[in-house]
Image 1 (tube, helix red, strand yellow):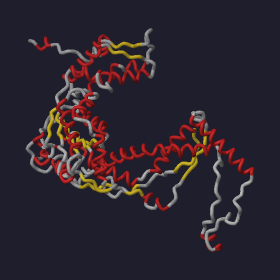
Image 2 (cartoon, helix red, strand yellow):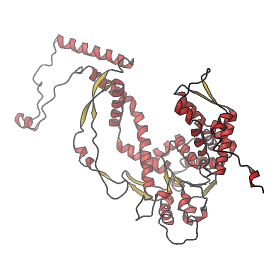
Image 3 (cartoon, helix red, strand yellow):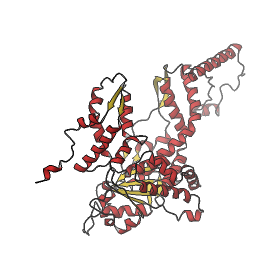
Image 4 (tube, helix red, strand yellow):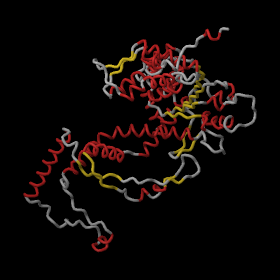
Length: 483
């Protein structure tokens, strides 16, 4: 039942066609069309899998992808944007951080435990959004109670102590023999209180009481002591062993109404959640829709003819293999099957080749995509086209200081050309070079915050860029190499 719910959820999220997925990726990633097509098809196949008969569905496993390309060409960005687009549990791990079982370091199972934690956050946030409408109503009543103390009629409580039970032969209601008759003064007082509550409620909705201080009751969550069981991610919170048997501790807090609304809203929404249901759905979401991005996978490949077991290389490959093949990993929320999790491996493969991986692991990454190096035209597009382009980011940051920053076309062209030159003359770090260039270029403006011109603009042109980097970057003078 739970798997069907998860698959139905997948159908709603992943109903985008491969072309539509690529079009969304084009908003953030320039070029690398082959890689985009491969990941788009891989995700569309997940949607197709949810439509096939159940007996066939279990047999269809995702086709894992191996991306090969130099650093800074967009490997990680494609996977990250893809996970955000599909709202799927996503975790990025570095292959070099893992060690073979029995040695000091992270074991490979931790990548699945991290994926479950990511899935739990996504599922919990979605469930909280569903509870916010009810939580808002409860929050409003609690704020009114704090502004008008004692406005709610308190019913007299029955005797509920064991002593009362023994002395009176049972739980007694103190008003059992009294006549429930109210005087006219009590009725009028109740009507006045209701009228006052309605007035305060209207003022709250009109935003007239946002700065008023009130005292609210919030849960007191002390620091929990963790007992390490020796298995990473499987520690026990000592405070929770007997925590459910004891009443929750609360404390009073004096805050403004706007802050109280946020605190109480989250607190009430949390109280409305069924965490058992959230955990079950999170585990299903991780199993059916999870994406694990293994970066620097080329660093655990043996680039030589060394045949012995290597702790940091071949041993890690052998440990990763059963996770990628499909196995059950125990987490503190329950066991997780990795059969239908999509794995994306990525690496530069400068000194090693994909064939240097052990054959069994090679076979588990059937789709191989080679990403090319970026040239000047790509850099120009990266600076201007994406919705989160670097130039737009710097313009937005300086706009907060009242500076309207403008880049001319020849300045953009010069920045792209200088990035290419620096990548050629030094280490090639791809598009990350653009961030280095722009930070240095705008360092003085960001520090000094100069007054803008008459039109309120500071213009960055080709001359400004060339002057800033005159002593740092220069084209090679080929004449000096001629004898």
